[in-house]
Image 1 (cartoon, one colour):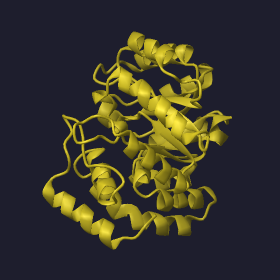
Image 2 (cartoon, rainbow, N blue to C red):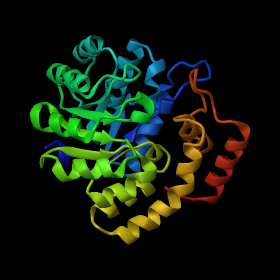
Image 3 (cartoon, rainbow, N blue to C red):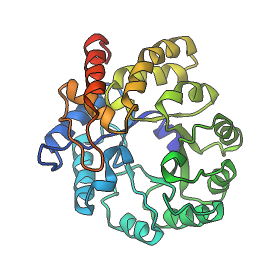
Image 4 (cartoon, rainbow, N blue to C red):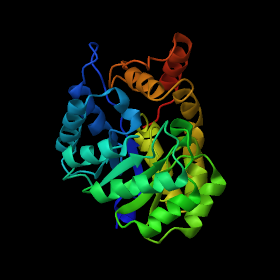
Length: 296
């Protein structure tokens, strides 16, 4: 059951680039090993944190294969495959090397702003085409359309290959509605680092995190403590991360995470346009935080 396989901390891994903007596979290998050694439970390759809108289809296929090879079955790997053209997305699901992926994470269509019924029809086609179980991804701040709790629950109950949701609406009422009424086997994880602690307390199964790229040990410890009902211990760990969350998302994602990782000498601070590195003032604040806060 996917709810057991993907319990805990998943990391929406960034894509490191060289100074010439090519994919930095040495940096990617270093980052993968760093987060696995930090105790995370699984990796999400090609989430939007990986700057997927600016990667070519060939690069995406190469990154999936490389990531699976480096991970080498140490932890499960989920692959992000999303888009706002349903037919094109179905073709991608048939083309990508997904045979070793435990699941596909697929964001609801962006920009088109389909109706709730349109979202359902989209995901029915995705689920039919996917060779792996599908995790829905609701992130209305980016897509422009919230996926209502009723829509999520309909898909959970009526579409066989849909196995979970990454819920990033920021609406605690909506989250609790889904948690109350979901089927027992349906995975529900947080997609918001800053809200993950209270959402875990409400019953979520874990988090797909950006911050765990940077602080895998501290973040995954917080998640594990919360999952074992040690809210006092989890709060202590989460409190130590609150300023990191603020700095990491002050400008855009993944510019903040890449600035942190560069300061820690794990990857280069390079992004592809239209994203750019954080400004000088924020960069200094991040440098000072990393130097003074010794976290795993």
